Length: 469
Ligand code: 5AD
Ligand code: SF4
Image (cartoon, rainbow, N blue to C red):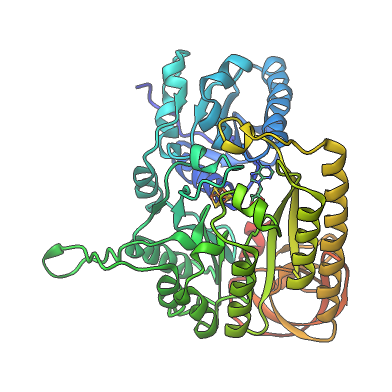
């Protein structure tokens, strides 16, 4: 292996897709740091460019290839000292095909192999074998990652599980991220305590299907034996809620089938657990839910929402929706609109169905015409925006705890997040980045709130202001 130099080198990582990718990008930066890589804010300043990709919809995948075309030009025009790596789910799904389509790519690395990046960089060979690493060995990845963690701000993602066994018929995740894998409770607790020790006051537990988490305790008892007691997410959250200094906890993204009593009760019992739940339903029609293999009905979903609301009355909800799934009729779509009206979401995401290679739905007949998909998407988005606006307006005049995470657009302004995940802008609060503060909401739009500072409620870490700029 060629020895790596440690003089500073620019690293530019572009992240597409979900929070799992955001987490993974941060961890990639961590493993590359000892090799002298320092993050830079543009590809022009970088010696190593990593595209951390998303395969969930066709558009996301195509974006990667168009971006690669632009980066290739940089490589051709520069002095040739640029390494291009494609990471994430497109890397996992398309593998060697990426190098064939865009030969300027030097490295293709799947989501379970990021810890091998230094090794791959050291091998400058141009053989495809050395340039491709898409094995499924999640435990190795987490083992390597948990030892190196660089804190960037007051809020941190903590990955507790990866992959998914639900096999919704439209979704590539079970194929790109593999089978469900949960980390042990002991590893998660160690990482969480480490983060809080470094000044983090909000932890977001992330996973493709986070509420399927079911780690063993994993704590080491007498005689060095590992405790094999099974925990579920509710129990993990209750335990995390006891960490001194951890002011706010979230988890994302969840499946309705895994919203068990323990997790619902945690919403009642754990004060630091934010009153916000992203619980995708995808459709408001039983026939479509069945064709999607979701494993629950509309009534089951509404029942869960009701139980969570009873546990935590100030709870707000978000969902994902797919319109134009094969066979979706006008009546099915009306069912989705009526579910949206019944639940009353604080925010939501809606997508046109996009057939993904290898998924069962991509072989289904009764494709919905593009124009119909467009029209349904636009009607649904209108309803979603109306609800977000209405929800945000109910906050005007109230006092919320806001965790300031970065500078706002105008001079002296800080941007933070409310317990309901609403962005909140506050003038004259820049010095409070990294802290959790009481804010009086003075105005609202469909997408954000603005507020006035009342008082500081946490010590936090003012030096995060440096880290975030
Ligand atoms: N087409 C459209 N949307 C999809 N999603 C997942 N797969 C597809 C697909 N094939 C959406 C779902 C999921 C979100 C992350 O992306 O709504 O919850
Ligand atoms: Fe995909 Fe369904 Fe698993 Fe979510 S639950 S990651 S939509 S297969």
